[in-house]
Image 1: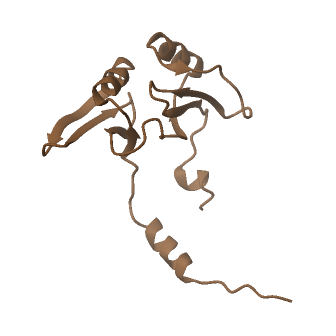
Image 2: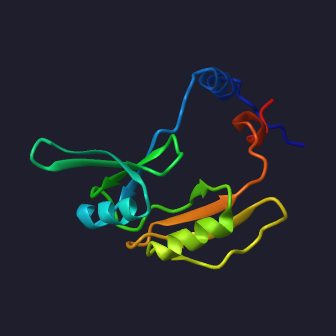
Image 3: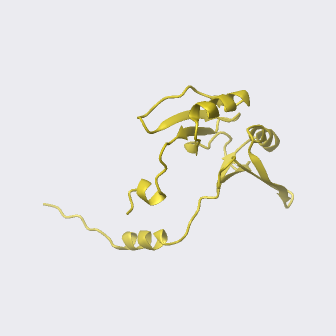
Length: 148
């Protein structure tokens, strides 16, 4: 018979971290051409929040999707097209899909995981992927994560 030793240190750290008011504000999207990526996202109706140089070698470009509290930062510090698994939630999936296609986005057909979760995978011009999803009921983050 074996026993498993558990530690309360990790549990204590998680409990403490959960009490800090934290918001996801910016996701870095790796691109090869910042100007081309900026034009692409602006063509989708995303708001330009910032575009300025920090020193001689770093350009800060940040855009926000309509209605979102989280922005993207266009970066050249990593591999272009490496941003994967980001989801944008919309109220009308079919309408959003039509609009994105009309604006030049590479969007696949709608597919369904189940009755409530309907992702539409798509990608920007460099291969960074986004899943667009229409979720009828948005759960508070604590319930969605299984935390009560």
